Length: 420
Image (tube, rainbow, N blue to C red; front, side, top):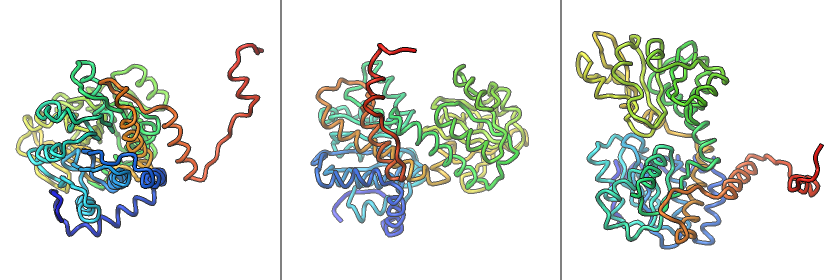
């Protein structure tokens, strides 16, 4: 094998391949795109550096890009999100350079980002904008090669829009997260289910009857709150946006400031994309046995430094992905080192919802390649007709059909003369 890579163990490859094939059965939209890509080769010769969660679903995306002719390198977008058998399979069976090891330290994580950038990418594919950030900060000599990029998640889109606003962004990026077939489904249904899955796998606790505090009420938090409520939990939502807070109330949830929720919550789940959502003043009033988890992209939503500073002693690992801190003898538990709990302790989103998200990524890469010369150094959304086509393909794969307008109905909607 002549390619360079850094994975845990290439001997895990066979098991990884089986799991990739299992996920592929749940991804008919991406499969249809792959079949077209194999015929048309729209990405032929394009060097792509992808910084994504290395999961079975991502493997199917990377295989699709490769089928389209792309020269792909993959690195992890989170130190705890890699599935080591999947990384091994991509290296062994697809000869794709992969730099990802579950549990890698920060130094290794950034070394892997550098390895992905050594590929001299013409296109970046990010989940959290770490690759783009490093590229702009320390590898600016590579900017001359860049055609454009895509960004998967809310946190990354926020960072990129801030860069564009400051005039720092040096190439166009498509915000995959802003596609309706991404954020309305992946964030809500994917994050909703997988977050609960991660918490249960890590703790094996019963949610029914517990008070769960959800930080934020964006699309991810909506899904989490809904799924927790469906399992019998009493859900409290904290928000800074009055419209979202009102929506949470109308959806049947209690809304209050985190300072109040901290006193009554049994389980805390943050998903805001901001720092220190859970902070020192909250830890100090939490009930004994409170469980803290995060489903936002970066491990900054729980102020772990502040928690460590007020703890009686260093945390101890009481279960895999469960650390116990003690504040004046009172235990408080942090799941998955405060990182994405759905990927730290579970397998991330189900393949059927990532089918749409990664269809957006594949088509976003194709769109960028065709249109980059006409785009400015800004953050863009995939055209609505592409979004609609992904939804149509997903419905067809599910055996669902919908109505179409008659000529009379279409004419009525396009005139203004008729009234009551």
